[in-house]
Amino acid sequence: MEPYVGITGFTKPQEICAVLEVLPESPLRKLMVGVLASWKSLRGIPLKPRWQKQFPRPDSIPALFPADPRTIHLVHYSTEEGRERSVLADMFKIHELAGPNFHGFQLNVAWPQINQMDDYRVAMGWNYRIVLQLGQKAVEAVDGTTQGVADMLYHYAGNIDAILLDPSGGLGKPFDTARAREFLAAIADRGWDIGLGVAGGLGPETLHLVEPLLEEFPDLSIDAQGQLRTPEDDLDVDKTKLYHSRALEMFERHQERVTAV
Image (cartoon, rainbow, N blue to C red; front, side):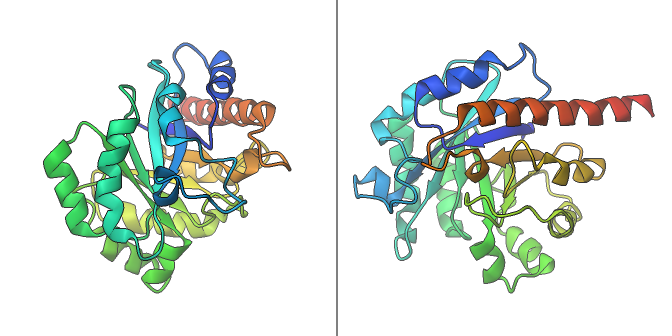
């Protein structure tokens, strides 16, 4: 899967248009437009106040995915405890809702049922991307070890396109460079053909925490969410544009260093 610079939590078309205005015609990394959906939001069930401003109405999702070759459009889906059996049905429902510019999913589900991933690929093939989030809950479920994560990921590697290591879960907790390197290395050592990505506390002022990883993982994707919100939990468009511009500059600097060697 091609690497990207991700922004998650868009709820209005004008937010995306504002970012696209500062995006180069041929960016080094595409913009991943991340839109949130959940078991609750798909059923019109009120969300916790912490998340209400970050989840759009499901029927508004198509308007958030522009027909622009510089973008990748993923629905970031999460479920509720005890509702894990609904993941596959909800994925199919999102296909019905998300419109013609929908490219796939990020599954914010701790180790979804393997048979559901198999069934999804049988039904939909490989035209749509699946990014599996490895959040705190997923890591803790395998005793918090890098080997445990890599061993469990073995069962999913044949059905996913990429992983996103995100202990923060969209809450903007600080990024731990050393810990991220340990997990990424353990996964990369398995030799699977899957993309690698990181998130957690990333924003315009914290990208320096990711940059040291590029030497070892040059195709690393990144994603930001919690650090791009205002105190009222709206998307801070100015901060979002600054994050995206600085992220592209970071990847360009790395590319220049590689080319110069």
